[in-house]
Figure 1 (cartoon, rainbow, N blue to C red):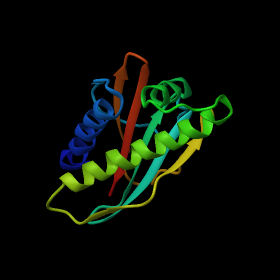
Figure 2 (figure 1 turned 90 degrees about the vertical axis):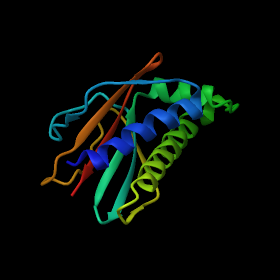
Figure 3 (figure 1 turned 90 degrees about the horizontal axis):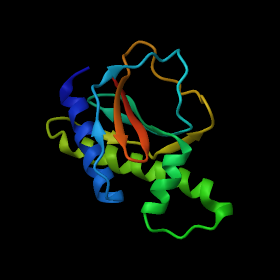
Figure 4 (figure 1 turned 30 degrees about the horizontal axis):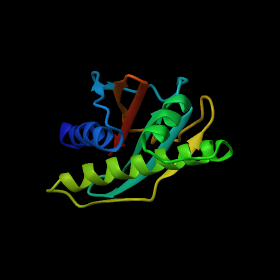
Length: 152
C-alpha cells in the first residue's frame, strides 16, 4: 500500500487526538494486519472510502479508553448513556480523522461514507480479502488504539 495513502491517516490520527483530547499519542511502526486472526479491540469505528482508491478505515480501541476519551471531551454523560455516547465519540473521531486525511491528499478524488461503530469483544470486520490491511498502532497514557486502513 502506498505511503501517500497511509501517512495522511497517521498524521491526522495524531493531530486529531491531540486537538480533541489534549493527549499527544506516540505511534509505533505500521504493520500488515492478519485479518483472520483475533484482535483485542472492543470498539471499532468504520467508514468507507471511494473514488480513485476504494477502501475501509477503522479506528479501534478498548472500551476503557473510549470511556476516558469521553471524560476528556468534557461532556457530562449519565452512567446509563455512557456506552452509547462512547461509541458515538469513536464514530465521530473516525469521521474527523478520515475527513482530514482524505482532504490532505490533494491529487486524488476521494469521498468518505458516514461512519458506523461495531462493538463487542473480538468483533468481526469484513475486510476486502485481496488487499492488505495496514495497522497503525498508537499509545496513550490511557491505553493503546489503532487506525487500520485498507485500499485498492
